[in-house]
Image 1 (cartoon, helix red, strand yellow):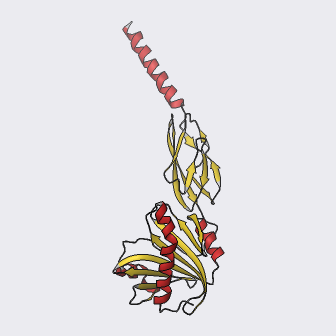
Image 2 (tube, rainbow, N blue to C red; image 1 turned 135 degrees about the vertical axis):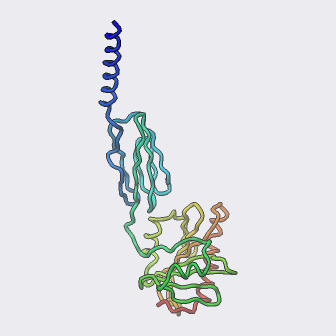
Image 3 (cartoon, rainbow, N blue to C red; image 1 turned 30 degrees about the vertical axis):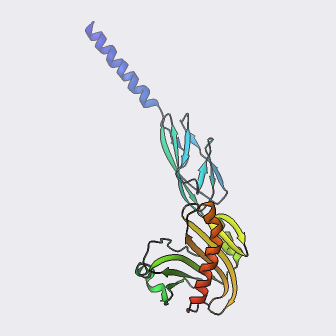
Length: 246
């Protein structure tokens, strides 16, 4: 009798192990997807129930309750998918259609010496006003404006480039705030404003479009001040520059 009970326990255990081994794992159809701005992707899966979706960077890509991912701005985001049967992640890469220039390193804690070291051989020069210039592959140039040793703004001079080309580029990367007096404003809704405007005939710069990156606190008042900051920075840059960018 004891042997029969022991045998029964063994058979029950074997049955339970067999049932567990027959259960299939929760899986996503893809682990990485590339999209352009505005593109959508519906997350596919196998062996999952009660799914919950979240994005770690909804600025770049968001996801709804049905698992539909929408691409917003260039960058990377991870979609976390939790089911009763487990957890999986999907990497979303939002890739651009427009590439006008390589964006500068935007770190407003950098010192002038750190900036100069970072760019190395592409360094062009600097002047007493605090401007530091760097060449960007012949088609654009970077400028870093330091005031009293603090980095105040970063600009990119896009040579022989129209404002429409630059706006296509920026629109894929940043939220468009609006236009005032031919100045266009964008934001990343975190800590930065981006201003852009087209210019013709400046003795040092010729024709092209200027893009300014500013650190800013994005309250409603700060957004409205962004255009004034852009204009002020532009005047300082144009008045103080002694480097020929043409």
